[in-house]
Image (cartoon, rainbow, N blue to C red):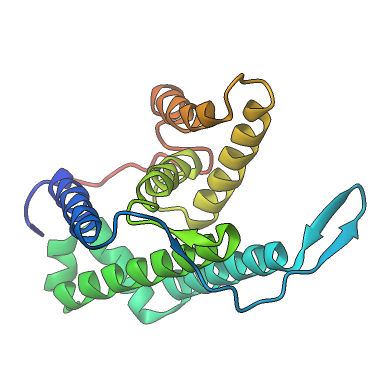
Length: 206
């Protein structure tokens, strides 16, 4: 699919996700308890109370985002990823192993998704076969909100999306409706700011 439309990999990824979800559903369709190796201790922090698990999740997320940003911006393979994302054919002519770069990119994405799943399981104490679908949609919304291709922007978009959902929950009659905000934000951003909050419109040379 490398030489096909940009929409083809996205549709293929969604199809593979649905296939894997239903495959796991045939094996185990109920929630499973997630091991809790960390002792959770709460302590006051000004007007709010936080616990060690929350600090670990926030710190781990920031560390992973910093490591990913350094890798993409400062390493040779990170530069190769950016070159392939901009123009795969030209990158291949310049000697960049495009297939290897694409494989490494998918591996890093899967590893970060696994780390997010571990943090989610630690926080909620259980896992389920379809637990990653809705967070995946929200992650895409956060990336669009911050600016596609902008790693700090994606993190900022996720933070703002979480704040909007948290505030909206207090005004909605049903807490489950908070997921509507993710789709509403996605629609508004695509209508009024397609490049995202930190994205920039760049001209392409032809």
